[in-house]
Length: 88
Image (cartoon, rainbow, N blue to C red):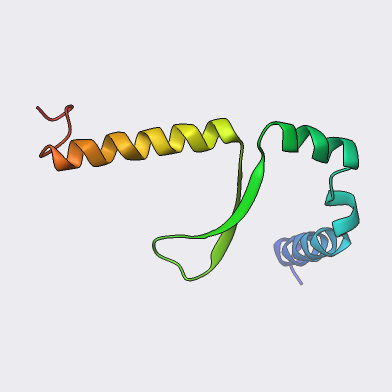
């Protein structure tokens, strides 16, 4: 077996082992972290992508959600007005 093939197999084995060793307990935030996140307005929800049926988890702060809403409203106003101000 060639060196390249051995390295490929070793890399794949290491990758799979690393993914398998990650436990959910380590990824869970502590109570203190949860309280800080909650005070920032941190929320997570599952959203579907335009080209996929699989929903992905998206976590945002209240400030990020405000910016997204403002941007969406601006885009909608520009669309209703007949195009973007950048093109005119």
